[in-house]
Length: 214
Ligand code: PRP
Ligand code: URA
Image 1: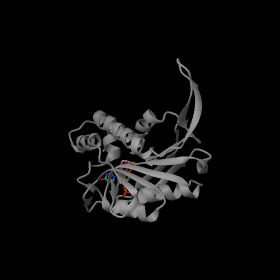
Image 2: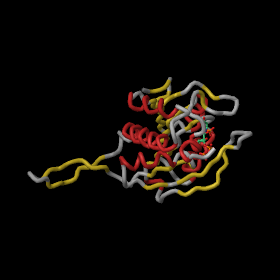
Image 3: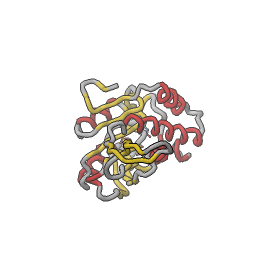
Image 4: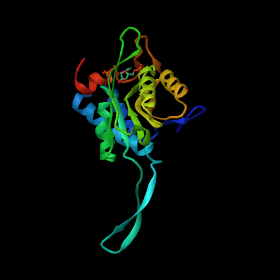
């Protein structure tokens, strides 16, 4: 399902994703269950986000005969989780694409200004030849996502997608306006941000819920 007039925003409408997001929201969902739900939702979103992967024909010998059959073409995919919470989505993507390379971008939001601060970055080379999928379960003000995509572009990344589980309208618009050339995949679009820039109804602090901190 696309969003308003944006052709590059895809909001998931699969019942399995909806159901699993409802379980994530529950404040009583324990850390271990929360972590496995994040992985499962990432895997289901990957199915949608990677539907335009290029293919090439390859000869394969079956027990019956030789045939020409499609396999994924091109350089290995790069997945780039935004630390910390994006890490929770990596295993879900690897379940679909085990050969994907992993980069990392470390950002945290200043609790007062809500602006992102970078503390770590490492991307797989050659980044300009890979499809790069940026992972973060939460797109709130959009500051972290915009900064992460800026960084990847500064390092040569050209073919970029962004995948989140929950977005606020404010962050989604900000990312789509700042980077109209990237595709954005959203598990669910929530109502708004509160005065602390948390998503409502949301699921709380994703990093804390994945890693059991607070
Ligand atoms: C959370 C979340 C996003 C960011 C979203 O990370 O995982 O990266 O906030 O907010 P934004 O859209 O307003 O930038 P946080 O800064 O809490 O760091 P953490 O993952 O290490 O907990
Ligand atoms: N980061 C989170 O983890 N949750 C929010 O609601 C907003 C930003």
